[in-house]
Image (cartoon, one colour):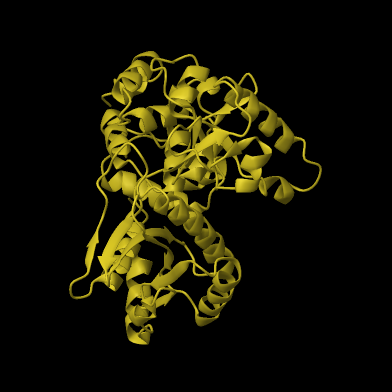
Length: 393
C-alpha cells in the first residue's frame, strides 16, 4: 500500500477510535476483504476507503460511487447484520466539494453511510448517527500537511514510475510480451518524451533510482543496474488489487472470456469520435494466469480467469453478459481493478486480438498468488525473463 494511501487509512481509523470502540483490519485471505471493520455503539461497520489524488468534485464522487458498491458487496458476505460505510480521503477537500458529496449521497444512496476525511482534519460523515464523529479542519493543521506533502517524493513503485521502469526494461523483453517504446535515453527529458509523461515525473524517478544505486552514473545513457534486486523489491511491493467475483448472465465456458475481451477491444477501437470519447470506455485486459496462458506460458490451470478493468463499470459488465450479483460463492471470473492502471494498460499486449497484461506484470502479480502463483512465476522467469533476472550489472 502506498504511503499516501496508508495515511488516509490511518486518518479514517483514527476517526473511529472512541472509548469501547474496536477498529481492526481483516486478516488477508483468498477472498477480497473490506479495508476496516469497526465495532461500537451496538453496531458493526464494514468500511471501504478510497484515496483521491485531488479533492476535486469530479475525482471524489466517482471514487465514492465505487466505494459504495464495494462496501455493499462486502456487507452481503457477512452472516450477521452489518452497516456498510463508503469513505473517500484526500489531502484537502474544499467545503464546496463536501456539500456536493452530501447532495450526491442523499440523492443516489440515501440509505448508505458515507464519509469524507482529509489531512487537514476534516471529518464529515452522514448516516447511522455517525455525525458525532464530524470535525472541521484546522487551517493551521491544513497548511502544515500541505507543506509536508509538497516535500514527499512519489514511491519508487508509483503507477507512473512502474510504467517508466517498463520502458527502461523493454529492450530485454520481446515486443509481443510487453508493449513499450524501446531505445536508449540519455537523460530524464528523453525518457519522459518516450514514456509520454512529464519531465518532472521522469526526473524524480531517475533521482530515486540514483539514490538507491539502481542506475549506472558512468554510462552515457540511463541504464538500470542490479536488476534482480529491483525486480525482487518490485514484486514485494504488492499493491492491493480490488477484486470482484462475477458470473455469466447466460452460462458460458471459460474460453468465452478471451472472445469477450477481443470483441470489446475491437469495439472500443472502432468507436467513431474523439479520443476522449474512446477513453470513456474503461480499458480491459486479461490478467494473472489467464494472461500467462494466452501468451504461451500457462502452467496453473483451474483458476477462474481474471479480467483487469480500469474502473468498475457495472453497465459495461452487463453489456458483456457479466454480473456481480450472486457471484460470491461460485464465480465464473474475477474483475480486478489494478492500483497501477497506467503501468498495466499502457504496457498491455495483443495476443490474437485479445488484450493481455504484459508478461512482466503477470510475473509480478502471480508471484504471491495463493493458487500455485510461485510455480507460475518461476515458469515465466525461466521462459521469458531469464535475461533480466540473471543480470548482475
